[in-house]
Length: 406
Image 1 (cartoon, one colour):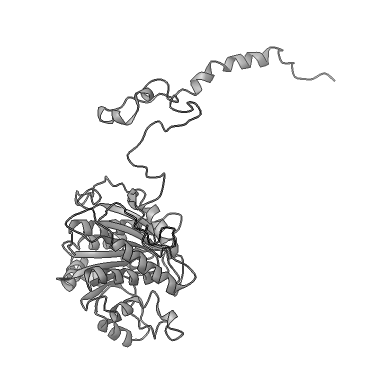
Image 2 (cartoon, rainbow, N blue to C red; image 1 turned 180 degrees about the vertical axis):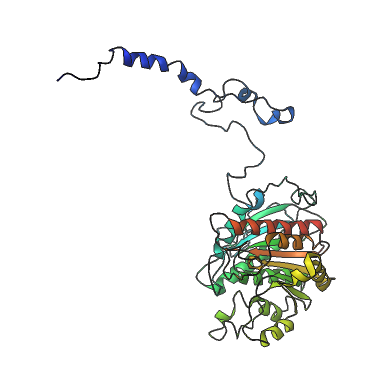
């Protein structure tokens, strides 16, 4: 039976091929738009012509066509795209091949240090991923940006700010891990500063569950003496190790709910410390609060913010720690789970991200010698790590705003 469709013209394939040829060269052409005069230096002259691919494939070698000053989404992830410095090189005991050797590194004044540890928790783990999460949450930040509130740039001031990467911590033995973190803090805090006036580096720790603050406080005690702690948290974290974990073993008594009690016993903190944002229940109706006072803490409960306002909270915090060197510790669960769901022990009824940032930003003119912030793994929207990164940025601003001599 003959086909109902007419036969195609025998020259049709050839004609179709010919019709596409003129478009082939134009499909690969790419012309850069004209640049403003102040940006002309960023592009080689050859790339402003009609041959945008001339810089590639020359003799089998490929070179990038131009360089941008910052690469927010390329290369090694660091906090706010700051420079990475191997601060632990040659420190001895870190597991690298240069232990005991004198390794000279560039000086810095304020360092971010990751502490990926989460085996001291009593609820959800995951804070071992906190440091990389915070760095990812900070990737939108640039060292050449200015605060819309203050007009200042914390990264371009007197202080050289770097990211030291993460301390090498085992996840199989808490005792060993905390000794490793003690060592890492000691090495970083003993480095040479870039400033010739302020000669002891200050550290902002990216946690890690809250147990890691114990190592940070040991480091600040050695370099700065006992400190007043401003502790943002939904829990008091001064539980007696005999009550929380210690009844099982001494090993179990060192955890994220007892570290401030241990810090008090070791003489690391002053009796002028204070909690902010507390709302979680206690284990013993009166005993835990009495022990908290014995450990040197006053308390601002979460709902007091509704009564005294942000300015009232700031005033109480500053009055409590006045005249002393200060360590600020931020457990991200001080925020309501609506703002920070990625935490190990979420407690409803917390503060908003804006309220917390406003309070931290108000703690100006304090001698802040150390700080930390700690979330855990996050949801795809990165709700928690975005908040944690902004908190870390605010903590940095406090340090830059007020240099401290050792």
